Image 1 (tube, rainbow over the protein chains, first blue to last red):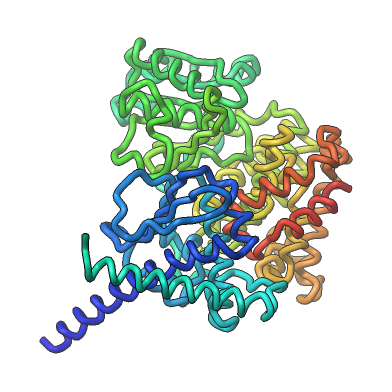
Image 2 (cartoon, each protein chain N blue to C red):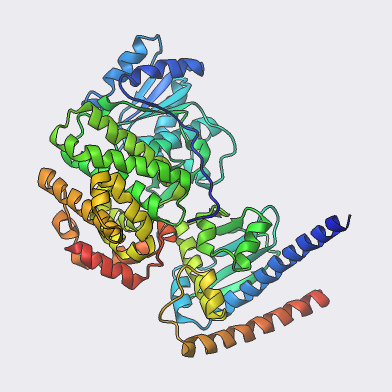
Length: 186
Length: 394
């Protein structure tokens, strides 16, 4: 009985972790697309209004972003149910957890068939590069090296630290805004 | 190497002498009495349909329709026309005879005749198909693409100027029939380029990120057959045993790469094919040694192992362990040079005479967005790809 309860609590905690990480990443991607030139250059060729979704099958959690033009991404939250142009769907919560807890690199997850990609693969490659760039900037090098295929050799502390501070500040603002919305639904 | 992998290949392979004569039995086994052949003019004019039709006639199977106008780069309208013919003639199975284009076209036709409708674009993407399609058989007439064992098809939508990808395990044929008679008359340069395509499929399957023990077994067996038979077939084109080796190698390499994917050689090849219309097999031959050099430090161990399959045990044991990876690259370069000597297969981009140096930047940018790059063991940047293309230019 106790084992069952413990397991159930662990699964709930894992789901909550993935949900929180998706939300964090949604805000962080929005933030980095306003400050990092490499991300802006990678996102710019995406069509305006292009919607990207990353989710866990069968029914979430998820993160959804829209390209609003000129390389800027906008986080649409986790309850978006409109048209999606590109989706990357984890086959199971366990697979999403492996990636989001940096036990498996995003590219390894692709290679290991953990995810189903639907949409233009070229745009999928771009979004993967953007995710890698985000992880390289906001995570300490030791952890980032576990998350990306190759830590960028040209990313020095002078670029990384101010970039990370700016992103964390914007993410914090976004999360507070989310909490207010949830506390005071209109 | 991955600690986790998936492997799937439900295609029955019927290979060897008189393999074509097994087709009527296979058709009868699924109660098909009115199959349709999908092929191209080149295959028909080379007389490659004759043994298939003769085999069916002797076994009371009627070929209900033949469509022999599949273009090299098939389109949605071709698919619609063939599907209409299939319905008019009340066919009950599809037989693709040809190279990648005929096989991909037949896969797409099978979607329409099974699921209904006229617009193949509605079924584009991954995971759209949810049930088995009509009976489908493939008889390859080239030894390189491996399309007979892959679950993808690409069809051009000319109205919207896009290429539509279709991905589903339901696209796989019931059986692939590998008969050496079908490749005996392949011209030398196509024989060389398609074999290098198969060699690249196997080499990338064995050295890229999604490699796994089962695809490794297929990849190494394919490389062994190519190493043993390619140059001998170039010297003796009507060598049936050698032709069968190459055809089997192509199928095995197809099984390998459809389960472990390919990497930067294919990313570059797709971009070069799209922008400069260079044949895919030729692109593979051009880029393979340069990409292996670029990836060398990340793939030293698997690349060293490939020397055994490519050059045999004597060379492998005579080569110091620390030099085997480089020796594998040298062996591939030697193969490429020998093919140039025998049939003038270009060794560099410059030698193709179809690419301008000013196009290299566009190729690099397009390759950077190709899906295959995800599986490459090294994270290639735009600068890396530009440097690599400069080397391949020659």
